Image (cartoon, rainbow, N blue to C red; front, side, top):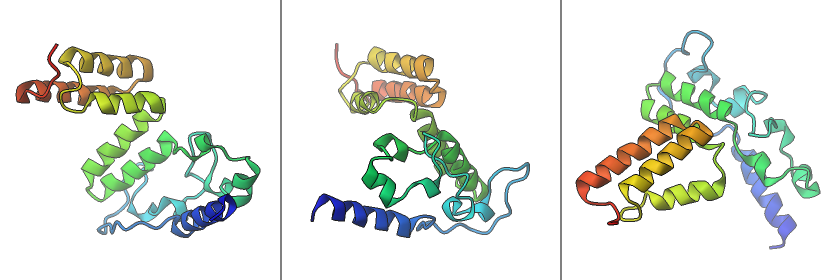
Length: 170
């Protein structure tokens, strides 16, 4: 399969699945105060002008022609933190609080460069880091990228690793 066929196939699959999700939400009224709720789900179908990439592009901006011409770059395919927040609000509106928390953690991490995220991931593997190293990573994420929730998560992981004997020995 040549590159153009592959791009066409990928774009066809993406476009065919926009707004579709295998998640079935229970019926519940939208949250008050202008929040996004169950009735606005799927966002890509019911609010396509509000679903944006991190570079500000809306769903209508994503076409095969723009991919082929090079007008769309890899960074254009990153989701915006605001879009993840809308998804979190939908999840909360149907009592999926854990999913909402995950969406918010992901929204925080959008500002963090990919190579640093991979480094954090590797550092969080058992026996890869000392407690001080993990706390240092948490401090950097919090101070440099305002990732307060993720920083707390990493500190908690460091504490749990310490209790379970999963830290790297100095």
